[in-house]
Length: 66
Image (tube, rainbow, N blue to C red):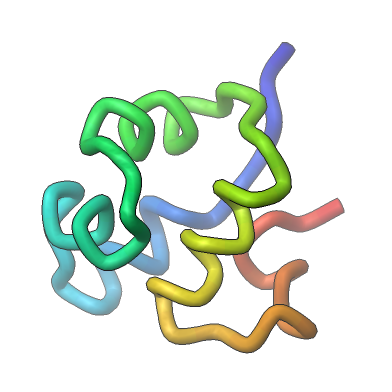
């Protein structure tokens, strides 16, 4: 199942590498690659990525639109 998200777009706008986002979020670079490609991920992983991108949790729909 594919999930839509804006992680790659936001990451590139902020000139962040996948490695940097992975480090800030506390996940593996492979996890970032999978999620950017639309793989399903756990709520906790979404939370870490949202915060690592500099968003508040209330802004989650900017990163993971419903």
